[in-house]
Image (tube, rainbow, N blue to C red; front, top):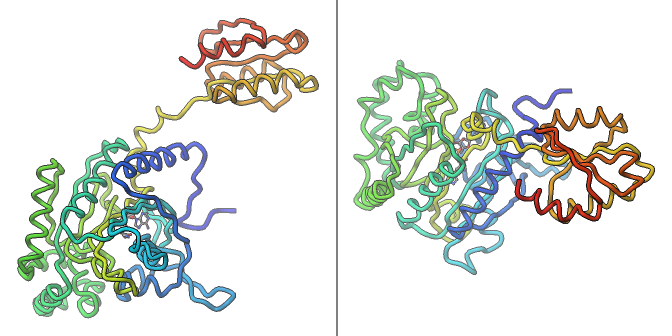
Length: 418
Ligand code: HAM
């Protein structure tokens, strides 16, 4: 039996890294007053069609949607923002606080062609700062993406690309200009871009097709349609990023694959892969909450794709795998008291151990302890059982000594320092 295409088991040897990322995020985001939120994985399909947009790739061809037994049309969430906006409205989170800073980590689902860094079930770590239209909120959010990548020790080079896509009116004016320009080259555009020209013209800017990219070079720029407010918002962000020493590149062609954004759009990209190079994507979405039936509430956020991040930091991982410190080998489980007494003491001092369950010879059990690269092997043979003793063998040096069970606590004081 194989797992479904585009899905992966996260095995115990990898889970440590997932837990580390969770802990780094939790510690860092708590300092900035972000609170964790967990929303359901399934939602009404309408939530995503209304928020992500009918003409986006996600809604058009990537959603895992199905009818349940009650004939409701449901979807496995393809991203977190729509669910957070829904939860913000359902739970009236705006009543208690003017600003809600939320973060989440969990699986998302998109029916895409699987490849390295692209899965059908993948995980996002995301944050949403809800309630402020000030550029300072955008900057806080971008700073946090940068801080998290630093703290996770992502040493691979990455770059922050940023753009302003203005507001709806500005984009409508721009779209007319863009489509007008593209019409002249309609026959030379790739098929996707031709289709997009009619229903989601802005996304043509995101084309990876060489000829289309060449045509776009002379196309009118979105920034020429931005008004004073949009420009000032964007310039403030750039100024603060410079002050914070966060390097960025302005990418005039950066438009995001989800319809809810306005003003700020950004992505953090790595050079390590040619495709699937966005490790983080985000931006401002001031109309989404109102569009879904909530009060008018501006917001900004991002999500990091954890599988992509983990590929990037993989090289650092191997040496960090935790070693089993203590291995307990036992000759005879029939006289078990001493075993449980030892285990209770190790538990009390929060020392990690593994009890051998094989019932093989002591020699084989000690060999296993060596294979696991344990530091210490506690040997409880017949002699030890009969006399309430424990033999402690240091596996790296081979030295060993036998102590009384009653001295184990004292011995542990010493162990705790290794
Ligand atoms: P997104 O750009 O669609 O934005 O996804 C964010 C990140 O999720 C991507 O940069 C990528 O690292 C990861 N990702 C997306 N699809 C896949 C996939 N099939 N396999 C592996 N990783 C993937 C959003 O989802 C927005 N909700 C982000 C946001 C939050 N904007 C505002 N707040």
